[in-house]
Image 1 (cartoon, protein in one colour):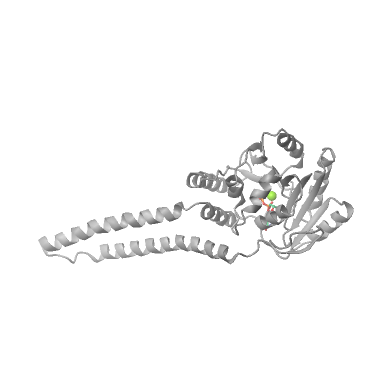
Image 2 (cartoon, protein in one colour):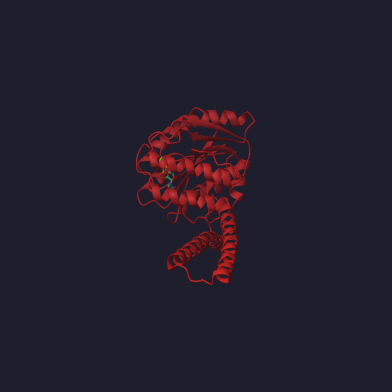
Length: 313
Ligand code: UDP
Ligand code: MG
């Protein structure tokens, strides 16, 4: 059986279209399926749509979170409640075409791969500034982490149960799934396709949200910023030592210790700035550690039609 996990946040218009299309494609496949629709605290009628779909089609399971926990948590809730031998993760806006599913399943059945993942072929239709930042982000994060993070990778994938379980077992609170998918490994086949606009509704990502998400990703998967900070500190200590000798020698030889208010202020400002920046970077890591140490659940479900559902995890 295939479980299709669909995180949904304010998708009342897109979800019925998605269901039609996915059900049509799956009708032509020889594998039974279940839908795991996750309502991520939508403010519109998404939950109502889910209830109606579940009434019509017994393959439709839904789980409704008690508030908006974010896509990562919604995906986690879906994965935790998926019972299939194969698990797919798909967006509700048809940017992940269900028509690829038969080919993906074929590839998995071949036995050579554990996961078939998708990426967008290019960044057409995206503002140039955003594309530039995105490219720099992928270059940077791949240099400083050991998990392979593929440029333009979408969350749309079909994987074996074993991989889905590996992903669930990474129970960290700060979930950067692009990194998690890469970190767990497994043999992955990549399919590229042209970017597709969403069918209905609005994207939930602003430039600023993406930027913060990118920083979160770096902090979740790399300690390099901390290393840079400590090398920086060491370097500046070395430099100050040389300065110190210079100042003492000048005092002994020329007896002129007071030279320049400007240079003193520059050094103070520079040092103050560096110290605050380093503290800030450390603070980011400490804040993440703090959140992890609380061990809070990733999601809380308020309503579901899944038997023995994992309501809190
Ligand atoms: N989503 C979610 N919770 C959120 C934000 C988004 O479950 O807080 C879902 C959304 O309903 C959609 C998917 O995540 O199915 C991708 O969101 P979106 O299409 O807005 O992102 P984009 O495709 O623009 O990157
Ligand atoms: Mg989308």
